[in-house]
Amino acid sequence: MLMPGLVESHAHLTFPSSIGRVFSGLDLPIEDHLLVAAYNARVLLDHGFTSAYSAGSRGQRFEVALRNEIDAGYLPGPRLRASSQETSGSVTIGLPRSHDGQHERTAAGLKRYVADMARMGVDSIKFELSGNDVDEPGGSSRVLFDEEEVAAIGQQARESDVWLACHAQAAGSIKQALRHGFRALYHCTLADDEALDMLEQARADVFVVPAPGLPYARVHEGADFGIDSATAKRMGALDSLEGMVRVCPELRKRGVRVLPGGDYGFACNPIGRNARDLQLFVELLGFSPLETLVAATRYGGELMGLRVGMVRPGYLADLLLVEGDPSSDIKVLQHRANLRAIMKGGQFHKMPDLTGQSSARFRAP
Ligand SMILES: [Zn+2]
Image (cartoon, rainbow, N blue to C red):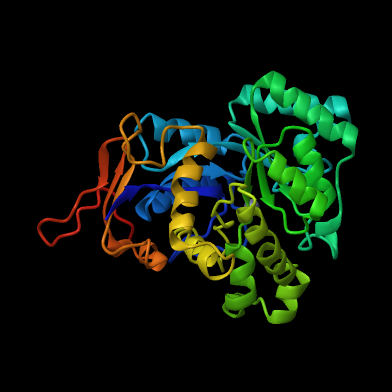
C-alpha cells in the first residue's frame, strides 16, 4: 500500500535511547549528545517517520542545528520542527539552573526568553505548564505558571511569530494554554468538562498529543528497566494512561485533532518504536485504524504546518510503500521490513528492493 510518511507529533530526538542502543539516563557529554541526536534522526526516518514535531530538546541549539543540516541534505532525518529546551519557569529541564540565569522568572523575563528562543531559530517553544508526578508526588495536577506569566508568554510568541507547545496535565494548565495561544497541548490527562469544552471550541487551532507510549511502556514493560509496578504508579504512569483513556475518546467525538506521538527516547521506550503509538490509539484510546492513520499523517502534516501528510498534487512527496494494509492491521507499520520504500521530498531514503538485497542508503548497524 502507498501512503503518506508518518508524522511523530511528540518527538524528542535528544532523548538518547533508540532500538538496540540503550542509555540509562537522558543526558550525555554535549559532543556525544548532539551526535546521538543526529543518529536518532536517521533511526526515526528509517522507521517511516518523514516528519517530526519536537516536544522539547535537551540542548539549547541542538535541534536548530540538526534541522538545518537535515534540510540542507547533509544528514538523513525527518523534517523537523525544532524546539527549545523544556522549561518549567524555575528550571530549564536538562540544564543546571545556572545555565539559564539570564531569564528570570517574571513576566518580563519570560517574554525575553520567548523572544531569545525565537531569534535563535526554534520553531516551537515548550513549557511545562503543569508539573509531573515523576518530579514530585501529585505534580501532574499542579499548575506551575500564573495567568500573567502565561499571558506574557502568549503575547511574545505572537510578536515573535513562534509556536508554543506545552506539557499540560492539570485542567487549569490546559485552560491557560488555550486562553493564551498554545498550539500543541501534550497529555491533557486531567481535563475536566470545562477544559474539554474549551478544547472543542479551539479545535481549528490546536492539536492534542496524549503520548501514551511512555506510560504504557512504564506500566507494562518497565520490569527490565528497573520500573516495577509500584514505581510505575509513583511516576504517575498508571494515572496518565487512565486519563488518556477517559479524555481521548471524548476529544475524538468532539472533532478535536488527537495525534499519535509518545515520548520515545527512554530506555524502556526507545526511538524507532514510535509506530507503536498508533497501535495504542486503536487498542487503548478507541480510534479505528483508519482514524489513527489520518491522525498520524494528515493531522500530523497540519501540525508541522507543511504540505505533507497526504498523497495529492501539490503536496511534498513524503511517501511509504508498505507491505500489508495498515488500515486493517495497524501493527504492520512497526516492522521496518514492511516499509518497502521510504521517500522524502521525492527522493528515496530507502529504495524498493527489486533484487532481494537491502538498499537502505543509510543502514543502521
Ligand atoms: Zn515529552
